[in-house]
Length: 203
Image 1 (spheres, rainbow, N blue to C red):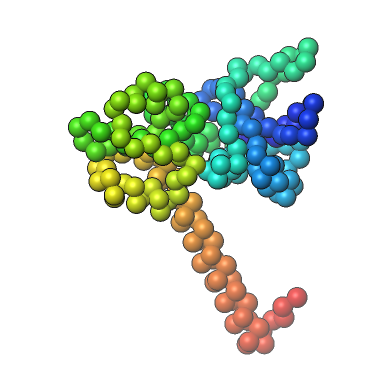
Image 2 (image 1 turned 135 degrees about the vertical axis):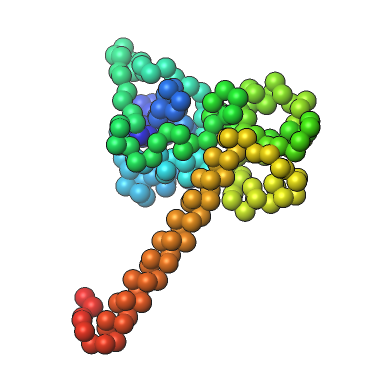
């Protein structure tokens, strides 16, 4: 699971987590730091990967690279343990480059050769394939509605596994919000009926 850390020499924070067998460092914007603080997440605490994904999608965290699985802290070597077997949010839920599995500066890319197809590529892979694609959109800017609109407008007929997985993630997030809203409405309706029927008492 992701862990929040604080820099020793300044008031800023960063996040470490394991993705694709690498330890990734996420830098936080001021807004990202504020969101974690408001959620009650303190230095050294683990938190759900779903929250990290949310911060990533809203541009409130960004990557500067990958560390090995052993992190050097001063003169002491510290082995960082992440992603316990009971982690409710597996690392595969996080989007990654379809070519190399990196998560650095991901973009949705429309290939212009042959069929209209789309893929998710990192900065390095985009630079190697820049002559083969037509459209490139930062993944953090893609909401569910925008992704569907881009697919329709560009007449994209083929989505690779990385785009399909990200689209499914956005769809599941959308459904969970509506399900939560419906559940809340049902609970409110039950409370109102109980109160109106004088069968119980609201505290």
